Length: 277
Image (cartoon, rainbow, N blue to C red; front, side):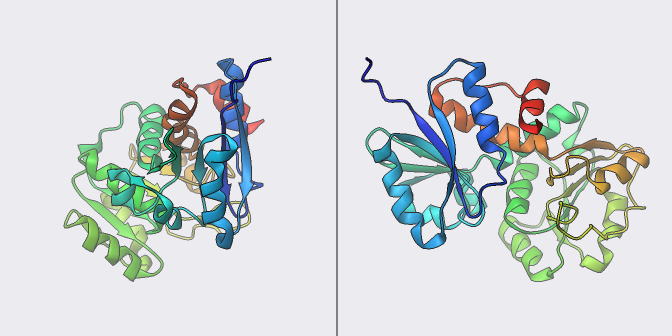
């Protein structure tokens, strides 16, 4: 019998039963014939520090982190990547051989990789981007769009102070628009992103008027349940290029899987079908 340890990874959240990450990582482990496993870990906030610090001792090489722990987990890290510092949250933990915990954020990478795969002709410099929402996901999107050289970002949130906070942090290329006028900013936008949970199964619909969408604009929704949201359906009817949110989930997992299991996986149609099955 071999004494080699089977590398383990998982996703930490509360609740966590809905997560598609276990299905995704298990698919890749099978596809590439790698030893390992990936499990959902439902961890209450009061137990976060205890659980995270115990995982390396139990054979874990890393973990994904989701709501509500993405900010608090930074306090437990020994090393934090520049991306995670900028975004102010981590979605990926890597447990180093010497016991230290490295925190990273791959959401921005996943967002851009999904956009480029789903809309290969997307030109970030073609015009302003319009972002609906100013929560944690929006921070990663703003950061990645600025890196991609989008000339200006128009951002609108139901509570304006959250959008103002992003502008003060990320700078003058952000312009805040009142939520009641969110539909108007779509008229200027070459790229449109919904980062809110509006339109998700069990949530309220996105009520922003969409008649200002420009034909040919690239429109993406971070919601992936349902995969084809009403927001995307309306955008398609208006001649926009649409990219669903499932691809962001798949692409953000690529660098983490590579760090944990030593193989860089590809996001293919088979990957999508395995997660949707």
